[in-house]
Amino acid sequence: HCSVLAIKSTGKVASSVALELSLEALGKDVCIKEVFWVPNADALLAIVTRAFVNIYDVSADTICPVVALQPPSGRAICAATVAFDATDGRAILAQMQDGSLYSHPLPPTLGGLDGPVTIEREIFVPPDVRGSAGRRVFFSPRSRVALVGYENAAALLRLSPDLSSVAEAAPLDLRPHTPGGGEKAEQPFCVDQVVDVGTVWGQMMITP
Image (cartoon, rainbow, N blue to C red; front, side):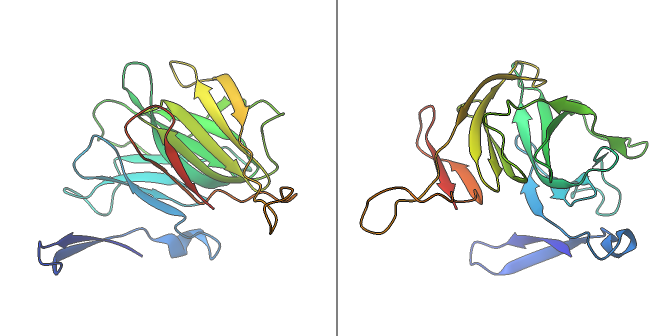
């Protein structure tokens, strides 16, 4: 289930709206993986499951999404985020469970959905920074870079102006130090959350 709550200044719930996702019709293995507000929009809420990325205009309709994206055949989504291209156009970045990364441009005005659309544009991540299985994808509007997390690795990606390819890639060493501050452990942290902090380029907080 997913509900949107309007909170009063006193901290009490003023009203709530429940989204009708009908996940039970897709099978027991389909559950909500992520929920996030679409940047630069007043009421667009994205719901991520292994079977889809749907965007709802919660101010107008909690049943029918304005964007419905599904993974390529044989693949499952593990994470998604919104990225911005060189002209500030929006796109969905979707990471699959096998670690592959895809992008899908969003139109300036969302609405008038005809049906689910398959995400088809793959972004090929260099094998020397790509991990074995997908975990998390994040895009920093301030730094204009994407962070992709895997089960055994993480990397920073600077994407092309149209978000269709990787222009530069750099691995992130997230291995913790062993007790006593000596050698780093062999197994790295898995990225769980990433947020922009500070006011300058490259300042991000990564939570394992």
